[in-house]
Amino acid sequence: MIRAKRFEDAKAQATGNAELFWWVFMRVSGIVLMFLVLGHIYMTFISVPESQSASYETIVTKLQQPVWKLYDWLIMVLAGLHGVNGARYVMEDYLPNKSTRFWVKAIFYTIVGVIFVWGTIGLYTFKPEL
Amino acid sequence: MIGGYRGKEGQWAFVLHRISGLAILLYLLLHILSIGSIAISRDAYEAVHAVESHWLFSMGLVFVTAGVLYHALNGLRIIFMDFAGWGVKIQRELFYVVLVISAIGGILTGVLTLMRVLAEHGG
Image (cartoon, rainbow over all chains, first blue to last red; front, side, top):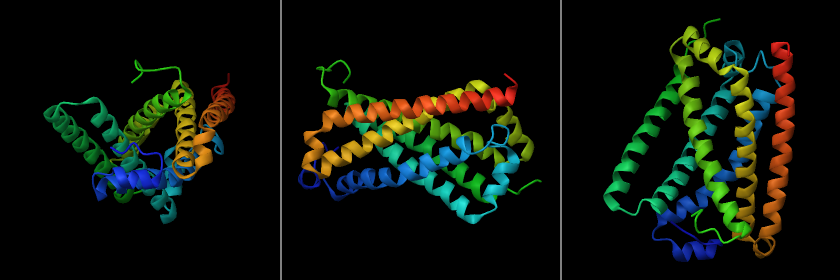
């Protein structure tokens, strides 16, 4: 994990290209997610009446446009990678034992992987029943 | 980490960033799990949605929103610190700005949600 305050320090501290990549990724995806997630919250819960918010019809109507499918999928992937990498930092900080860390990570990545496949299937294979 | 707190704002910002981040990740995973039920059938989705439409869940989402606001704004603060000297110089002040904006956003969302919930359930 990199504890640098600046890109130059991060570059110097990085134990490898992958670690530096994640350091940059957290910042870039963070800025993109700011807009995607706050926009998503606004569109789902502020600009829509309570009765329509996340109702079946609302979601199906929205997902019939490919651009919203892509928007939701992008949020899922970016927030997922950003969140999982954040959780990895936390695990590396608090699990000093190498084999414990390995197993916790392995189980955690597996659960997250399954949930992501589930979400992608949900997004791209559902048939609207209207 | 919390035990090592020395009364500095930077440390609180760090702890809050981690806690809000983990909470948002947990929410994201549950959100994908529940909304993915749309792939099974309309009935499956609506059964899940009926549970999540409870006003308690709506109010819970206010905390998710406030957490996202804090995490997003503090993330910006981190980026300013990473790439600009002035970000480091005023990081303490920025932390309070982040807290205030998050609190205002959280309260606003809370009031809006309360009004929506009352309108829906006939208060």
